[in-house]
Amino acid sequence: MTKSDAISKLLASFQDEPQVITSKGRTYEDYVEERKKDLLGYVIEPENVVVASACFPEYYLEMYQSNNVWAIAKWEDNWLLTLEAENEFALAFGENKNNLMMLGFSSSDALAEWLG
Image 1 (cartoon, rainbow, N blue to C red):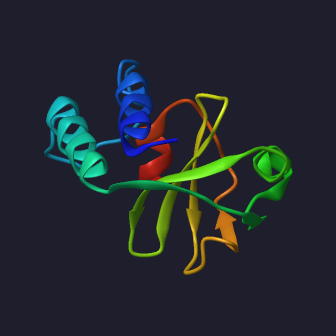
Image 2: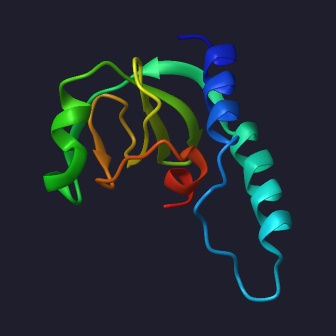
């Protein structure tokens, strides 16, 4: 996977209306556009990663441990993960790409997953 592939995957995800909640006094449309721009600014050259654990392991941990997982965006210790062969995204945390902890949820909504 290349950085261009990652951006294409995110842009495809943005075609569906993100399921995010805006803060008081903000319009949904403005908030979503700002957050999309922010996320695209955090895109990295994709790296294969290892998901070691999850806050909520009963949901998607097994899926992310048994597939090829790429980190495609990073901010501090926050990583946006995607499955190579699926339009699925998940948020993970950690300093080491070989020992990440997922929040535990996954969906085709990259922006919602990134925002937690």
